[in-house]
Length: 353
Image 1 (tube, rainbow, N blue to C red):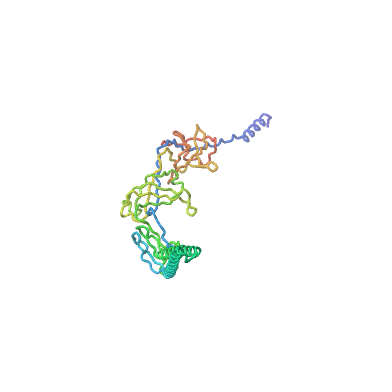
Image 2 (cartoon, helix red, strand yellow):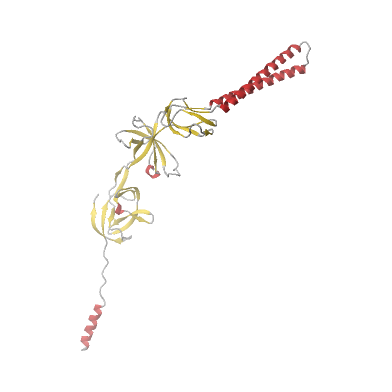
């Protein structure tokens, strides 16, 4: 083989070993040109109807229950007797105090007669001044002792009257925690009383749902099993602290006109509208994460970069973004799984809002 042929062969072999490397594929993505719209979130709540004023009734003295006149669900009038304790022990105290008062009355009569005698004898010189003063002091002591005995008797009679448990106001019995024959201590709740008058719809909700709820905000309240029965109310009170047991806030809504079918304890649904504000709705696929913050891929020219956003609400199949995007921003809605900041992409399809 000639030297020229060998050279050509060498060049050919060298060319085969130096194949040109394939260029990487440019990712194809779908984008959406966003346009903020007025968003008015509506929060649905479930609660029950309660009395504005609820009272726990208890005896003011200890004893054994011998009579119970009402049960849960009964309507009671003001000053109606609900239950009675055995009065024997307290009646003994009344009898003892009565006897003590009668004894002091007798001593006062004697002291008064003795003082009157000393008062008649002193001007005639038949008694001394010291005896007169002693009789006067005894009279005053007897008067004080009688007053103390009368006060003890009044206290004993008052304690005796506490054996009757009466309703302070008209209302409905909502709870009963004792039975006839049971020995109860003073101040232990026996009945729960929901007073007649204004009614509230009470809801337990998570803090984030009512972050923007204002006092006196209108709420539509309806029966859960019959939405046709409805009324309007206003937020009267929102508890300032989250419950440690449930992690919720208690919201009380004053009902303007309570329908007859919306009875005490009825389960109701409440609808409250948050203030209107501009927001952007995006499909779930558009949402990603930048460290620990929600973010989206934003197309700038032919490259993509991450943009942190604030998610107002998570809905079925989409999210509502309240902050982080402006009108005309192009958000990647598909094909963003393998992207990295500054990466060049190719737009396969662009959706308009």
